[in-house]
Structure formats: structure tokens, C-alpha cells
Image 1 (tube, rainbow over the protein chains, first blue to last red):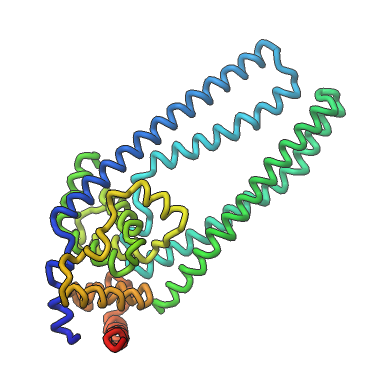
Image 2: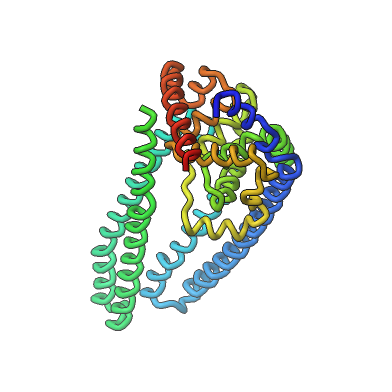
Amino acid sequence: MNDDDLQQIWKSPRNEPGEQRQRQWTRGFIRKLQRARRLQALWLVWTFAALTGISLLVLLQVFLGKLTPGLAVVMGPLLATPWAFGIHFLRRFRSKDSPKPHTDLPLVDALNVALRANHAAQARLRTIRLLLCAMLPILTGAIWQLHVAGKVSGREARSMAVFFIAALTISGAVITLRILLGLKPQEKRLGSLVRSFE
Amino acid sequence: MEHAEQHRQFEEWIERHGAIIFRVVHGFAERDERDDLLQEILLSIWKAIPSYRGEAKSITFVYRICHNAALLWRRSQFNYRRRLERFQWLREPDEASFGGTDHQEEQLKSLYAAIRQLSPPDRSLILLSLDGLSYREMAELHGISESNVGAKLHRIKRQLTQILRNHDHE
């Protein structure tokens, strides 16, 4: 195949999608996008309604003095975690249509930006993992103090310890897997792409 | 930007630059992966529309988005299966995508198969070159010098000819 043959094949109508398929792309994409947005919005409304209801109930119980001080202390982090996730998903939902920072950069710059973002994400996750590790002795100490002060029984203290240790260990494992299976391979691939531009 | 305006712009760009998307998808992805890459490119275009200020020509902007998305795209098995179910309507009609079954179609398939054997940055460069972009435009899109583009294209074309020759002999 010489250059002329190549150009002839390349510019042939067979190498184009055709009007009908283009219309199908657009219609299908918009339809699915709108449907996905609606479902996400519904999910968020339901989640925040449920969280607000539960939080108000807990506050009411605290004001009425129906919760033991030990349980009231535990409810704080227990409620804070789903609220934090809810806010995280809301922010993601709101920024869904904002472009990635490297969308319209030259390819080599876009790859470098993606590589830097990968490094930043790894650093962020390592910091969170470190904080989780630091939480372990602090929480153990806090539970021990509650027990010593007679605020929680031995059985309650053990349950709380098991729950928090399990939650922290699972979170740490998820972060490690995200780094090893997601970010590390991506870093390797981006690095090799950047090098191939040099 | 208003949603309606974004919608209108999206429709207009797909209509005007559909061929670019089609060629990038075929140049970067195998048959079963095309739906996934197509979806990724359409989503990148949709998201990029509000940041388009009209300083560059829309065609340059779309080239940049498509090639960026293709280079950064990596099919994950999980996402692939999930999207395949959600975006079934996007499925390319497999090998019939070029229409007909004659010699020209065979050549086009061979050409794309050869392009996919190149490294991703080389694929991008040869696709731009086949689309008729100047050295200056390719240099701007890739962020390298014009002389570098020339040297790379010379090597890529030799490599591509070799792959096609080997394919003809088989």
C-alpha cells in the first residue's frame, strides 16, 4: 500500500460513522446521562433524608437523657462516617460535569498532569492510612478510659473495641488495595507513556 | 453554561467531528473494547464543552480531547462489563462497521490492525497524519517540536509499512 492508496482508503466514506450512527451516539448518550443523573439525585435525596432523620432522632434521645453517656460518645463517630460519605458523594455529583484538568492540554502535558495526580492520590491515601493507624491507640485508650470511669461495662467496651478495630482494619485494607491494584499499575503505565514521548 | 446549550454544542460537535471519534476508537481499541472507549470519549467531550472558550478551532479542541481520552483510557474488566450492559446501544456493528465486504474494506481493517500494533503515542501521531494535519498542528497537539514530529512519523510509517507487508505475506 503506497501513500496514495492509504489516503484513498482513509478518506473513503467507509472510514466514517455515517449520519445515522452519529445521531444514535448523541441520542443514546444524552438519554443515558440524564437517566444516570436522575437516579443519582434520587439516591442522594433518599440518603440525606434518612441521615437527617436518624441524626435528629439521636439528638432528641440525647436531650431527653435517654442515651447513656457512653453510647452518646459512640454515636458521634458512628453518625459522622455516613455523613462524611454522603457529603463526598454530593460533591462528586455536583462536580460530575466539570472537565478533568488535563482535557485540553497537549498530550505530553496531559500525561504529566495525570502522573502528578496519581502521585498526589497515592500520597493522600498513605496519609489517611497513617491517620487510621494513629487512631487505633487513641480509640483503644478512649474506650479504656470510658470503662475505667464506669461509663461503659466490660462487655460494651469489648464490643466497641472490636467494632472500631474491624472498621479501621477494613478501611486500611481497602486503601492498600486501591494503591496496589489501581494507582500503582496506573503510575507504571503513565510513566512508560511519558517516557515514550521523550 | 446552560444544559441546553451544552446539549446543542455536543450534538453539533458529534455531527461535525464524528469521523475523528470513529477513527480514534478504531485506531486504539479492539472490536470488543470499542464501546468502552467510545463511551469514554463521548463523556470527555461532554465534560469539556463548558471549558471551550473558542480560542482554538473546535476541530483542534475535539482532536485534543479524543486523543487525550484514548491515551489515558484503560479498560478495566469490571468497568467494561458494567458499561457494556449500561451502554448496549453503543455497540459497534463489529466487523460490518466499515460496510460492505470488498477489498477496500479488507485493507481498512488491515490498516487499523497495523495501527493498533504501534505504541499508543505513535498510534495517535499516525492517525493525525492520516487525517491530514500539518506538522505544526501535530506538534502542538502532542507538545513536541515539529522536527521531532517529522522524525517520529518517518519511523512510524516505515514500521507501519513493515507490519502491513508482513500481514500481506501471511
